[in-house]
Length: 327
Picture 1 (cartoon, rainbow, N blue to C red):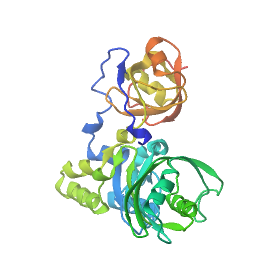
Picture 2 (picture 1 turned 135 degrees about the vertical axis):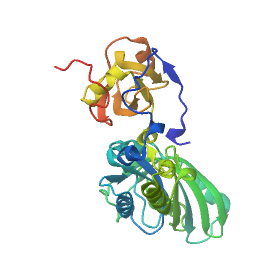
Picture 3 (picture 1 turned 30 degrees about the vertical axis):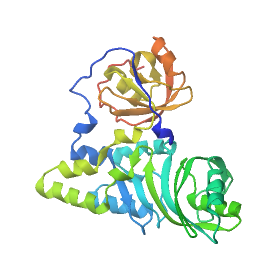
Picture 4 (picture 1 turned 135 degrees about the horizontal axis):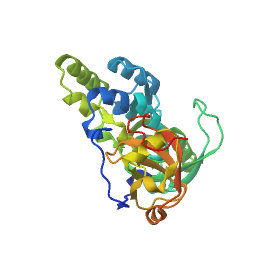
């Protein structure tokens, strides 16, 4: 399974309430809020580059700031998370989410079925890759994780497969390497991304869906459709372990403070030292990303000290009142 499939339970450290006058529950965000701090689970069509899709979304929604999580080749289709406005701050978390693809491996000559299955299974686990010539990154040997490789169907020299892998894995290179091990040669002929973490193909929308919803909102003043097409930024954090903090601790993090134990209200189980965790408000808003210094069990047991260092602020300063002492 992908890392995002890991199930955690929530531990309650203390009881606390949130002030309804500050912040907003993600599910209650209005269209304008989502345009500045939401994302689209877009079903990318075949043909355009991922950057071209960004430009089209900018034009459709009439906004200035857009970014995508995980580039897809022009010919590839499927899940392409498009962050809007301030939600682009959270895109880096998708590097830890794991991705799933369905593709067609084209063998250059017929190979016995059991041999194909055996070789494909041998690529599950840690592998090493060199990015292809046309890639945008430096061509050095890189280690990547293949979580699963399932053969769906074999028809002649076409092998339909499903693969779960670490972000940054080149599926085209993987197919070439499989062909080399089979000693017949192979290439990737079709590719569709079906999942990025907990963002799945079944919930994706098309560019036309987005355009229709935006026009309907502008002309009819009805937010129903656009709120179903643009999701709160909070959903980008679903695959991360979570720490929930009290209202009084929020603005300190927004100003760059590290996370102190007295601010914690709830904690996910099985958080380990070195993990990247999402810090949320009691309304489930994303506040920041932190690097964990102590495991969740110690966060529950201790009453003081710093438990995580700030990596990236996701919430704007002043969203919650500043009641901490400034020096």
